[in-house]
Length: 418
Image 1 (cartoon, rainbow, N blue to C red):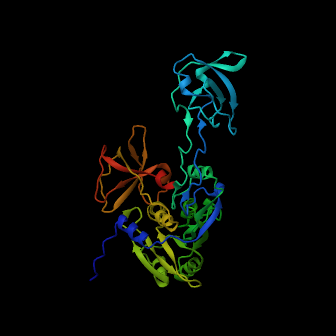
Image 2 (cartoon, rainbow, N blue to C red):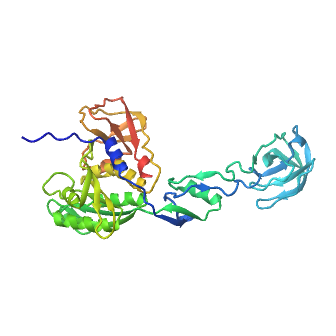
Image 3 (cartoon, helix red, strand yellow):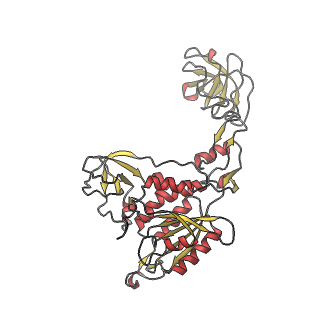
């Protein structure tokens, strides 16, 4: 009599267990700010200056003393012209300064009047101007330090650097940034049925053979997360070949990612191979698609320590979804990055899902012009077209049916592919 199977671990518990095993890598690299897009900041950035460094004009127009312009129609003498990058002289009562966007505001001025609200008294004489409005103190002025104060911590360790962050770092005068080193990841697929595109023409594919699509999207996803990827290709469905590939990968990498061979079939050699070289901490998750997921470690033979191991399912949608939900958080944790859970929104289902699965389901959907969600017609874990057609998934709890009009949790792919 066989003993009952242990219940599958929930996705949330699996993620907590996985992250509990991860310690951020300690190596840091200095990179040019121009080249730091997508990298993870390794230290807080503290400003050594104020931004702006001086009061400056937010408009092309005239710098004035607001006390001189208490009503429309007043005329003032224009005594100086101040362009960006140049300082003027103090402004006296009854005077105005022609000024341009970004130029320092002269001492004595406390307001800017836009040039559209003025007119020259004599069109060919710019030395005297009539103001068509009164001036309020502080209008169209950008005050010194209004953006950043001296000593402000403007970016924090663990932040992912994007265009806005790089611009902010540059505004502090930083030509180089300290960032976390890129995780070194070994990637390989298992399966005698796999063929690389270009090796065999579609018309010549042998019976049972399929093109290796997982290799392409997994490599792209890893690159998007800032990893240095070693592509070890396709490993045959043999125990000794799998063991050899894992040994090679462990010695030179922080993480090993495999695709296929993690189920329970006689030709699925990854699980026993990993167990012979290390250990597994996770095996099979209560999610659909994506049940055959494995996490553990492989001991290094030529250096101390271990390499993290992730075994993804062979079916492409399962592999894609488990990567987004489990591997991405792991990779970000290795880099000491901030962890933000995907932000879901409630949208109406414009479909019926009458057959509930015991596992938590991720249904591929697409937003429609009515503000609801359409369901892809085929939810099989092997239908990769559903990931291209859809722009997200419905996160459907285990045992839950869906009727047309029900409000469901929608998770857009943009949350995880950026």
